[in-house]
Length: 560
View (cartoon, rainbow, N blue to C red):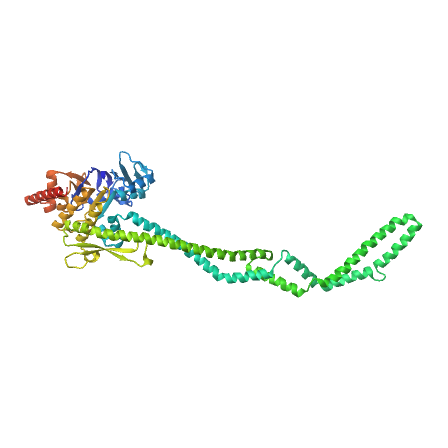
């Protein structure tokens, strides 16, 4: 529960230090006295968005501290562990400070983001305001209410978890299936390319070899002429070799007469041998020109290789690498098809798990709707709606509309009077009825929740005296298990409270300040009388106020 609320420099509030106890507390006061400021201040401590306009005029800083002694639910315990917070004296202290250019937050003295306060605030305090009853018209909110009333959190979590798993599995399958389909469309083209390159059969270094052969063939006539001239010069009658043979024989004969000429004869003989070999090689080169192939075939081969390289955006030496990649792509397609089949199986398995979880949630919702019916009717009767019937309608959704929230839509339908058909509450419920519907639902919901702080911010606006009294009694009943606060203008609601505070404005030294005063005995009686008759309090109003207090005590004893 909220045990202490300290407020400094929030709008008209200069300084307030409030101590609260268990049970049901009413907060009353004239319009404009500052009741909404209390909600604004508490909201800051609970992590609401910082509004710098709340800083009191003339001050540079505003601050709110809210101290709780919370029920340690599994959700709160997990959040405390996540934040590394250890409770001292079983207290949880939320503190918020505003300055013109900054907002700071602390949790048990440790600086934290405001969003962390909001996480804790959502577990500590449940606030209901006038506009909040409009949420009851939203089918999504109605579904959440049913799941809260039925205690479906674990079952709903299973649906949400399996739904996320299904989405991931389905996305993985669809993405790879799309890639595989594209690969199939490309398969024929890739196969043609592979066959084309395989037939082309480029050999390493082939480009240089072909270019060399081509150069020889392009210059074939010129080469042939040069080699012929060289051959004739070496071998024809009177050519170099013939003269050299004659000279060699003459020197060898001379060396037989003069042995000193023998080295010269040997040198000339060696030269003759070398030139003879050269002449032989020249003749062989001339004869091989016609064996190099033909120019047209070489040009066709070079053209085909260049075209293939250009087509694949590579150089000729890289064509074997392209061939290898194309072969791998064909293999990868088979592997991808196998992976697609596996992913499809995984998606189907996830779909089955999701469907099973949805089926369990549907069954839980149907059971909750049936079992809650008498409880809701009893709560509506207590709230001065004795003839109203509230039905929970579950409508199956097409499978393609199933989501993490289940396989059906949830709608609250109201039959306001005997004989009238049940219709969506948006069509038949008035503002006052909406407030009581929400209160009836929450009255049932709070029975199964751990004690917490509940705030009702003028949700009784527009109600008549009898209806307001029933709302006050319902709030008092909630206050027996939880700490409940009601900001109200109704004396019937205020009379049902175990504690009563009056909010009022005071002018001191030219400054307006809002104060919160605890009321007991005569002071409380006077405030109830004021609520009944206005500022001019009459004896009749006082008597009526006494009657309200007596009635409230009687109702409280019955509830106990």
